Picture 1: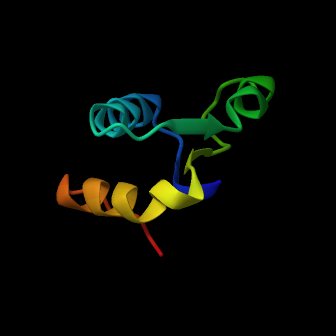
Picture 2 (picture 1 turned 90 degrees about the vertical axis):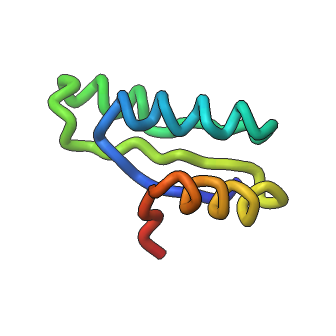
Picture 3 (picture 1 turned 120 degrees about the vertical axis):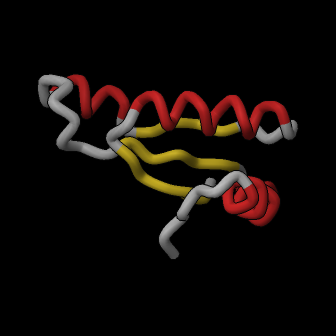
Length: 71
């Protein structure tokens, strides 16, 4: 698994997961439960992950959609 991005915005995560799914790429969100344990105040970013073999295609897709991925 490789990380695409981190965010505290659940709406953005939902949209990105739908975008990836439409392209046939499975995305997984990590740290959801940790964020909830901290009181859901949005202080802990959630990580959007994809399989290593899908990472390049996922990065291209998200950049084409106007997303900034950081690294």
